[in-house]
Image (cartoon, rainbow, N blue to C red; front, side):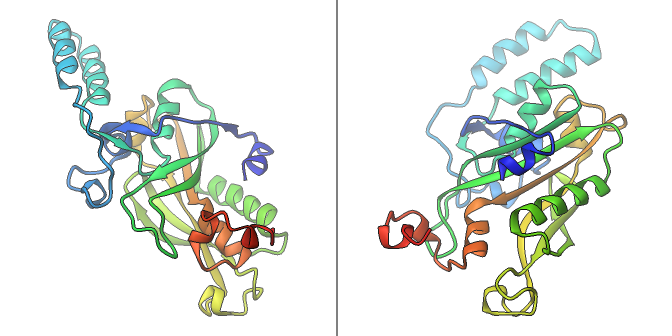
Length: 258
């Protein structure tokens, strides 16, 4: 997957697996009462919050009179405050890249993520995600569709059909989910695609203006899009594997088939 996107000019980016609430949720436009922040979804760590350090910085910056400087100081405090957690998605790396690099930005982000999920046929508490981020002047939904359609044809085959359905994610607007034609039945309908002829592979959308602001960019000047998917789920779809746990058990009878 990384190789396909590298051919489109994407660089590879990585980030820490231990994050603060701000990077994992706040900077991605999650409201404070979003259910994903509840204990049953997120693995919080027994590490003291960095409130005291933020208070010291607050005292040092209290004499700043310029509004923009005061706001920047407040933003820096927000990044450091809150509880520590194991990241629930690779999206915090998007914010870190935006804070570090000026546009144009074009990165692909693979990595492990953690959720308080049971280990069953379709869920794992630790799994691999990969997502992409593009930010520049003049970016539109057309660029998103063209990029992901190219990826689908390169990865699943030249005859692969693609469709986009409206969806919702806090950090993108508008948002969509992308389906590809079922590679098992060729889109005619089979048990693998539940008779629909389509398989959902990823979520995507135009980056929400607030996320661009949290990343230090002016949404009136630049726009962008992002997309993300679970690598295990794609492997299940491509290979016709119905049991996620098979990927983790190290059974040579299973691995030998590939």
